[in-house]
Image (cartoon, rainbow, N blue to C red):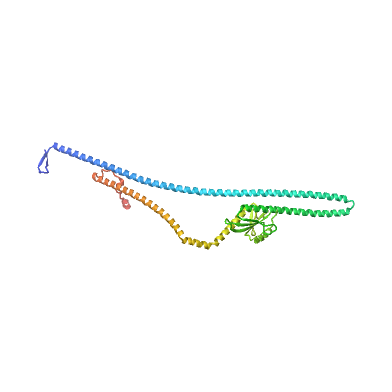
Length: 418
């Protein structure tokens, strides 16, 4: 039995044999296969485009992240270098200050040792001179005694009683003379020692304080040993320091009232007593009844400290004296054009820096916005292409891409538990 088909033009029935039907089926299958291959080719091309787009998006994201990382690394490196430079500069300044203070301390210690050596040498020389004088006096006394004995022996037979009386008188006179000579020798030695210490103190003060006026008090005049008029770098008088030196074997509390009287007479702000022997409660220096008491080794250091105090007090007084004038000058400066110009210059510099910073910020944000827009366009095009392919081929034929799928809506917790 032959199949019939109706002609769409004339509506006539046409017999279709098995061969013709097989040929039509084969031709239709070939056409369908060709169309299917075209669709698969287009699908592969779309998939390659999607893959290239994803690669471009990933590469752009990596470029952005790498650029941001490079900028952050540069900023961190710059901040670290600045912090390291500041730390090195601070450490260098501290080391220089310490080296300077060590050098000053070593210099002062060397001067003190040299002074001590000089004083010890002078003491030895004085002791040797004293021993030589005592030996000469002893020899002279021995000679005089020998002469007296010889004369007494010669005249003993004739005028025994008279000579005995004269002898006793002569011996008495010699004893008196001996005591007077010994007393004068001791007084001369003490006076010489005191003059040596006074001269040494005067020389030390002149070397340590060349800008101050160091004036020795003449002999026989009340008022201490040395008057030091303290002056600052400009030559202005800042105060007076009165010095008294003692070189005895024992300390005497009677020195303090006399030195206070001399201080009032000299109109000095500070009185200092330098002595080889100190009170029991004072080891090196101290302040007793308004008078500074010091050993010879600590005299210069004490003078530096007291002189610094006088300079600070004088500076404070001068600052208070011109306070109103300085306030007027400061007010005129603040109200004048010079101060306004300086402030405007500072503000302009800050505004320029701020504008440059804002410009860099806007430029960076603009680049980021352009790249973000390009990324959005690439993602939108990729999503549209994936939707087109899904509509043409069918949702089940394409592989599932989680990044392009709708998120699943989870059921509520109470219903899920039910």
